[in-house]
Amino acid sequence: MQLELGALTPEIFIRDYWQKKPLVIRQGFNNFKDLLTPEEMAGLACDELVESRRVYKNDGEWQAEFGPFESYEHLGESDWTLVVQALNNWLPDAEKLIQCFDFIPRWRFDDVMVSYATPGGGVGPHIDLYDVFICQGSGRRRWRVGDRGPHKEFAAHPALLHTEAFEPIIDVELLPGDILYLPPGYPHEGVTLEASMSFSVGYRTASAKDMVSALADHLIDNELASEQIEDPDRELSHQSGRVNATDLARIKAQLLATLDDKLISEFSGRYLTNSKCELDLPEENLGFQCDDVIEMLKKHELTRLGGLRVLYFDTSASQGIFYINGEEVTLPLDLAHVIPVLCDNQVLSATSLARWLANQTFVEQLTDWINSGYWYFEEE
Image 1: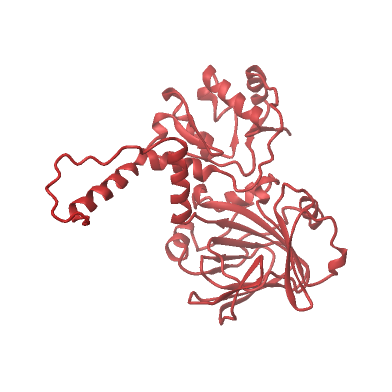
Image 2: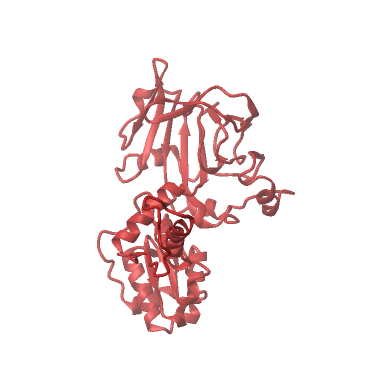
């Protein structure tokens, strides 16, 4: 799978469109094939570990239901939509789609959402708070996109936040292989013209509120930032109820001193590598031995589990530190250079790992990850 931008290079896209304005990319994918069939998607939506929902109207009123689902016959042949989140956690082929947009770093990546809709189906006019590339698969879907502005939102259903009617700045019919890019804040609505599938590659960040809340939990759980303010150079006070400018500066300095690069990278690494959805991990240790791993690497590549998040920071990777699935990992310094190989590549081979396969510590750690299901052998 290859993204075809023509004269629109990734550099131009980032400069002129990313988080600035929506864009229609005609035939961004030539001969695009659905990543799965509607029947396979319905099978995923039967699984209680998979986050799914369906949206439809009943007597003119919007309805939304959450999976797992067992049947769809009662919904008829029109005016309903099935959505599955985090397709990349369950379908390895979704990784090929994500890689097409790797000019945006993975720490910004959210998930791949797949939507199947019957004619007339949609989820209503709404505003998203994330960037998304909507990749049209089989069928046709009409999209209307409005401009940013003070659009009123309302609950069309407890699970559906809709926006008021808007004047479109884009009104387009997407065909297989077409892409619609939407930055946050633009109202939009898609209505299916014929049974169709679309695959949305989403990118988001957490709000400062959510991150500060999680940071507070991190400080408490790890008993960090317990230092008290010290002020041995205090001047005599004549107004006991006053917090003067010097005191305010002390308070601010204490808070800012807590937020050094080490703390922020450690917290952010754990926070950003937490998967929001279930991972398809084994229930028990898989039982590989180090010798098994070395032998299998001679014939097979290792593939990272779909949905597994691994990240590193410039400020700490040279110290052997990186983050995987919400945990901080510290490798010996002589293994620091393997970190970008592990984090930047979805597939590992004996060739890419050759430099470190004679290192027993690394092989033992790699074996532990394989036994935990973080990487698996892609057998031909």
